[in-house]
Each structure stands twice: as C-alpha cells, then as structure tokens.
Length: 368
Image (cartoon, rainbow, N blue to C red; front, side):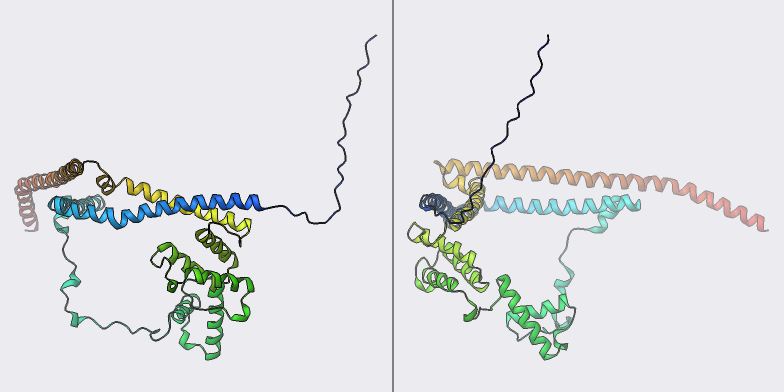
C-alpha cells in the first residue's frame, strides 16, 4: 500500500513585538568623531602638499623655464609661431574657396585670389574724430548693487526703471536686495540686520572673524585663507548656518587639529569637501608634471634635457613647414587647373567667333 504523502510543514515567522519605549538612547560619538576628524586631517595634509607643489610650479618652476626658453629657443619659437599663423590663414582661405566653389561652381583659385591674405581691420585706419561719441550710461552714479537691480528690471520686466514711480521703485529694490541676500549673491552688499541674525550665526561669525580677518596678520597672503574669508562673508550675508558650521570645522582642524565645536555630520561634510578639492588639485598636478617645464626643472642633466627640448621644437618646425608646403601645393594645383581652363577657352574662342559671324551673315541675307 503506497504511503500517503505528508503535507509540507509551513513555518510561521515569529511575530515581532515593537517597543513602545520612546526614550532617546545616547550613543558615544567620540570614536566616530575621531575617525571623521582623522580622515579630514589626512585629506587636509594632502591638499596642503599638492597646493604647495602647484604654488612652487607657478611661482618658481614655470617662470624659470620660460626665461631659459626665451634665452635659448627664442628665434625658433618665433619661427614656429609665424609658420602656424601662415598655416591657419592659408587653411581658412582654402576652406572658404572650396566651400564657395562647391555652392556656386566657380573656379576655386579665382575665389582664393579674391579673398587675399588677412589684412588689418578697416576700423584701425579710421579717424577717431569721425566716430560718434558713445551713448551715455543710464545707470551712471548708482552703486553696484543698484546698477544690477536696474539691469535686472530692464531684462526681466522689459521696463525702464526711471519710468517707475518712486514707491514702486523703492519696493522692488528692497525685494531685490532681500532676494540677493537670501541667495547669497557674491555681488550683494546687503548685510543682515542684527535682530534677524540667529545666536549661533553670531557666535560662529565672531570666532571666524578673529581667525580669518586680513588685519589679524596670520597667513594674510595665503590664498586658502583669503578664500575662506570670502566664503565666510557670503555665508554670513545669506545667513547660511550650514556653510558656517563647515567653515568652523575647517578652521578648527587648521588651528588645533581637532574640531571640538563641530558635529559628526559637519566633520564628514568637511572630509567630503576636502576630497573634492584634492581630486581637482591632483588633476592640475598631473598636467603640470607632463609639461616641459617640470621635466626640465627636475632633470638630472639639464643640458641634455635642453637639447631634447630643442630637438622637439625643430621637429615641430619641420612638421609645420611640411604642412605649409602641402597647402601651397594644393593652391598651386588650383592655379594650374585655372591656367589650363583659360587656355582651352582661348582655343575655342576663334571657332565660336566664326560660328557667330556666319550666323549673323545668314541672318542679314534672310532679312534682305
């Protein structure tokens, strides 16, 4: 007798009982803060190293290489520039003649001769007395912010601000200033009123002003400090507390290496921002290392490196001369074609003249 198949046992998931306890459990964020702060400090050190290398390249390496290049390769570089200027001019004229010949069916060499080499602009020989005076500036005498507002009215409302009533003009201008302050415009000179500033913004602003103000004398010439100062002014004008918290964390890490006043979230924001800045610096540094100036400066034997650079310049000049000769050969080919065409037309012209004369004589006989 066959066994009866037993039905599969279905296991039921145990019911989950959620807690109704609404008490907040405090966690020790100190290890997480130390980890985020350590990562931010590590990235900050790399940013400073890359910034110093790029600053040295812009301040020392590239100017020294340009001086050496002007002293040793000046005539060759001038010749290379002249060749490239001729090539650009000839390529432009050939392309124009080829395109117009394709559209009109005219001879390309005829069009090429009509264009001629590039000449000085016609305006350069005009008498300055013949020129009419420029139109007066309608916004002259206004401060930069009000000039921006008047341009905004002309572009958005397509209206002349001088035609508005005084009450409407004042109301729109105040709305525009509040909007610029809210958006944190870099060109807005609006400062928030003291009553509208939150206490935390005031506190952070006082701390950062003591650290970043140009009159403090600390790293006054450092471009990073100047950028942080500009960011602080924009964030304070827009009352952007989030941005000011990030600036506070950055300056804390610069000053003491720790960010005791900053939250874990803002420390991670600093690390993310510094990582993006480091990526951009790495790209610039890779480009600098590929330049001849970097190779020449760090070469063990600069005489040998200079000979290689000279050989590269001479190779570029030979290549430019070959390219120029190829373009001139193309123009010469057009010239030969035009010459043969004129010769064929000259040979055919007596036959056409005789046929025309015979036709006219026959027409006269027919009229008689």
